[in-house]
Image (cartoon, rainbow, N blue to C red; front, side, top):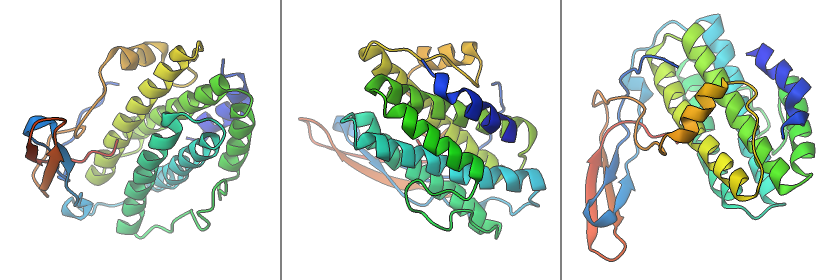
Length: 256
């Protein structure tokens, strides 16, 4: 984890997996007929085993809690400068990502590293410097801001996949990380699409170029990253654009 952060501190300013899918506990998403869509709450990680937490898992959770905050805070700040939907919509998703990692910290009684949730404040000094550097870079132009967004998602995917491959075996952490990774892939698609629309591009820094191209070539991901085991069920209601209302039931945890 630290290696990737140190690398980013050195190169962020030049911005121009085959993992097994675990079953996930349910926080339902329903899609009704007539184009309706709805989400149910209740993604209950307490339904999964309370397993021993390794030092590596603890370190990963502490890092990801603040790394998701960094994403939220950077996007909120850049959104005040550039009126783009990606900087309006994605921070809400990043808040959900923060909350899911916070749920894991609470479950395992690990002290939350976020003692001050003010924007741009971090306990991790590496993340504090990274935030400052990315804000400086993103303030240069709209293209630079979008490249900063792609860089953050690049780093998130890299750190999450590295943790799942090397450090994490607890079922609840794996479940949450799989869904955070799915969300970051969606965010990467959004930033890359906006970059193309503005005449810019992004040179991948952490994940492989092949993985990056595969993300861009695939469709937006919806629903859970894995199949539900049914510990929780959500009801969804939605109103279709022109035809009736929809009701749906869904299972799984959508943290995108």
